Image (cartoon, rainbow, N blue to C red):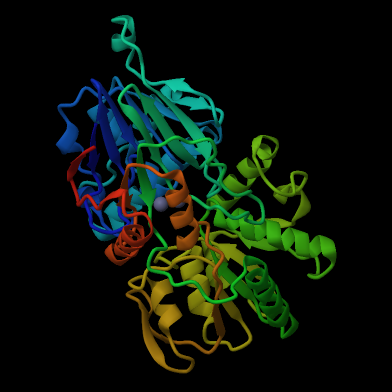
Amino acid sequence: MRIVNLNPADDIGASAWFVGVDGFNLLMDAGAHPKRDGLSATPMYDRIRDEDLDAIAISHCHHDHVGTLPMAVRYFPAAHVLMSELSGAIVDRILHNSVNVMSRQRDELGIKEYPLFTHKEVEGISPDFHYFPYFREIEWASMRKIRMGLKSPTLEFLDAGHTLGSSGIYVRTDEGSVFYTGDVCFQDQTLLKGARFEDLEVDTLIMETTRGNREPTPGFTREEELERLVESIEKTLARKGSVLIPAFALGRTQEILAQLALLMQEGRLKKQPVFIGGLGRVFTEIYDSQAKRTYRNHPDLRLTRDLNIVVLDRKQADTMKLTGGRIFVITAGMLSENTGSHELAARMMEDERHGIFFVGYTDPETPGGRLRESKIGEPFHYSDGHGELIRNCEMLNFDLTAHAHREELLEFAIKLKPKNILLGHGDSDSRDWFEAQFKTHAPKIKIYQPGPGETIEV
Ligand SMILES: [Zn+2]
Ligand SMILES: [Zn+2]
């Protein structure tokens, strides 16, 4: 069995894994690198361009896993495109949004190769995508090979608990089995329940390592972290300041909205409008419409019904009065330029009454990352558009990750007892941590850290 890491970078990067076995070829994920621009953000598809690809399976609809799917389809027009039913409810919106973002970046940053694909292309390919419930065994060989009478290998999507539709991908062939974790969360979030990675017999594990470089805080629990967030929101509103929670439109926004809805139902927070972004609204509606098919807590909670959600347009973000205690749950999570959260944060940070609360990862080289490093009363470079700003407002960080903690992933992998483990989707210090742990606690497992474009034979 041949496995090729197509991530063009040595960090978390763009997820894309090629698996070739017994004359059958599969691509798992077709991501885009969130920190790179243009073609350098795309997986190394050229490496596999001469392969007779049978199928493309998508783990989930975050940009770093699905953001170049139309390009992959262009390389391999005959390949089936497979994903979970719940991913099927969102994939179109994600890809169309990517076209919009890339078109804007072409105009604003002069990236000539953008957009890498068009709305028309997305409309042309998406009707042919295939959607499956979790835990359904799917034959993924090409039609041509099946007509030749060849026996197809199978795959299953297993609920990964990370975001709506997220899956681990369990591939079984005559030559052995591969399990790819995708992004995984083992603990329950407010809405989504934890991963169901059960009944696996795995020869080769391909695993994410996002949090390998994060040392656990002693005594940390998610419940206490949520409680701390709730108290911080209460305090800010009590002093008539506004709360900004920068959040990704898919996943994080809905988890925070669910928390706010529960607090308002319990009477801990006064009922009041919650301002979100347009794309956040789209995914919130989809979370609601798919609630019955989702393995989740609070199955009867409907965010669009149980909360007073107001879509904030970009102009309002520049002009709206901010005192008097408003709540914003707005993209982008890292306060990237030309987003609602970027402008709001710039307006809020000078006033000590307001609170900006981060609930997810921010790259240090983004406006959000720089704001997180800022010290009260000291000027810092926020963004090219706004230049230097001074922060007087409260700024807090909350660890409400949708990724497994490293000890949980380590325990999962050791219990699984695979023969081989390929470490990916993490910075090099994250992968190194896992490698060292496996060498100590499970020395029989062969550990690989395939670099960009590297092939591993197992
Ligand atoms: Zn993800
Ligand atoms: Zn990811």
